[in-house]
Image (cartoon, rainbow, N blue to C red; front, top):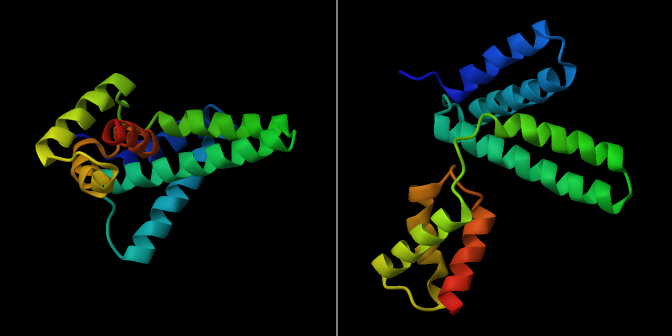
Length: 150
């Protein structure tokens, strides 16, 4: 069985500590901390899907922080956030391209018989199981909107 994302990150923490890569060690320890917090809050062992969702949430938070730092003229802090995003992205499955997402969106729209923006929830629900973890859901939502209002 392939090792879980959580155990992969734990192994990478050990490696980054040996390499004295302080930035990577801190970032991965934050991820492990988020995993443990989620396990305690929900009283369950995390699945790979849960781990992916947590990493995506962490990346989204860093993107928001990065945007705020750029707006505030704090380039060094924005670069730190960007470095953390790069480290976290290593542990996500390969992301779908915009063309692949569009293709899947069009397929689901025809499967569900959706034709108008009011059907967005139905389309997003059907898409979630197909591409969760393999695409930025913000981008997916944008593509769905474009194709439902066309």
